[in-house]
Length: 291
Image (cartoon, rainbow, N blue to C red; front, top):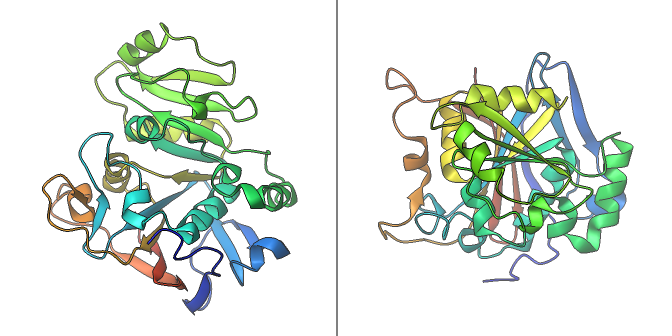
């Protein structure tokens, strides 16, 4: 199925009427012509008054699978999407609007050559994405924020070594001690968020806020996404539905298992559908979570 969505526009099938939130402003708007050919209309993000707006971008199979394996092997979404080019384009658009891209260490380890920038996944349109960020008065590249409790990272990873991409590794005290044994690029800064065994989501959000970010994009993995959901920290979910049935192998991770049942008193979070787009057989949904 690879290549099935190559070059196809993300045509709008439905858009909610009126404002979507009571924010203090928006980011985005009409896209530059080279990007508008692929994404007709506008893409806007509502900005919050007192904290960063948190977006999440995920791809799921028809039967709810968001990763194809346990551990690091299945944390990437390429196997789920069938390496859909349209899905990569949507990911690049969101990276272009974000101040920071937040990823878990498992996602980092799964893609040794990956960089969390629009130019990395859409090199032919790198100039158009750069021009849009300039128009929006954003830095040339979003900051990559890596969340790792253990500090188990490879200092030679491509995503940690692009000189023009700031990187913040948010970790525990023990993780920072492990990272101190590595030779990290000058663009990498280590932030200690906890003396315990985990990185608290509240502290992670404070690190994001400390960068001055107004828009943060979470690209997973599924466990980090689940923690953000449980903390009620996600504002918008961009969900690509890929046209495959992943099957019932016990190693897959399904969206319902990511979220779990521990929101408190058995309650989940309801969301409102705000837009539906399509590129070939791929469906692109956008949801806004209610407070």
